[in-house]
Image (cartoon, rainbow, N blue to C red; front, side, top):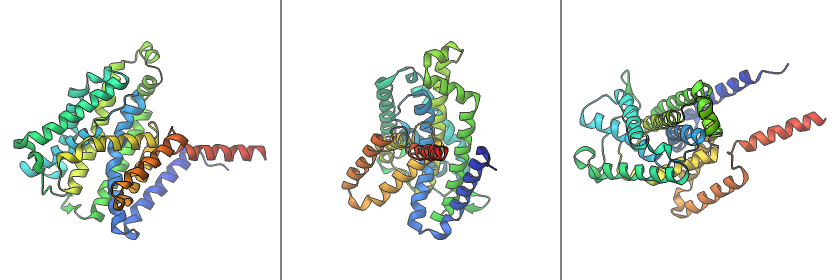
Length: 320
């Protein structure tokens, strides 16, 4: 008897979650450290999928929004004495408000015009972080950011933080799947496929675009919250154009509309970045080659390779 696909899919997801839950017991600390960054980066990459994958708007400001979330929680905890976990909601809200304020009108732009607008947003945020010294400490950055603590248990070490980051990544994935499967997700897909056709069936195009931007910012803000409480020190240069490019590449490599593909691509590219770090600047050459080959052989996402193999296997079974 064949297993129904939804049950099979949930069984695989449960097995993957169990494997991830026991990974710290066997893996070296450095590997756990890398996986922590994979979980953290999963959030802004998934967020970018809402904007780029479903509205067709390529954003180079996700790194800046990631930084807004990080700075919001860092300043509230170190400057105003807030509990770290209490700053999660403000980190998300401030990031969303800033994104909608600065980018709400820009979503009407198309193609390179929108890309240029997001580069402008990226630079505005970086200049504010660097020069508003009374608020952000400017080039000095923010130090001594406390670890997240829930019920008296602090997620301070690499292994302790692993489970917090895993929980955030899992919840963000499930929430994103629910949104994509909802009526809003249907509107966003219609918008991406054909904007004129979507508007002709009463889809409020501009509102849908702004909603996608807000969702993208919310995921980036939550990722920034995690990042600040893991590295415990942040600086404006951590949120320049480089992380924005990195997040965009991870989305492209995984496939804009495939959450699983984006998570897999984040794991592959972040691991490659860390293990190639001893090669200094030369690692960027290898990194670029990996991306070039990816774009040549699976432009719709790395998981399309697996799907192709599955299709061929089914075709082979059908001919027997």
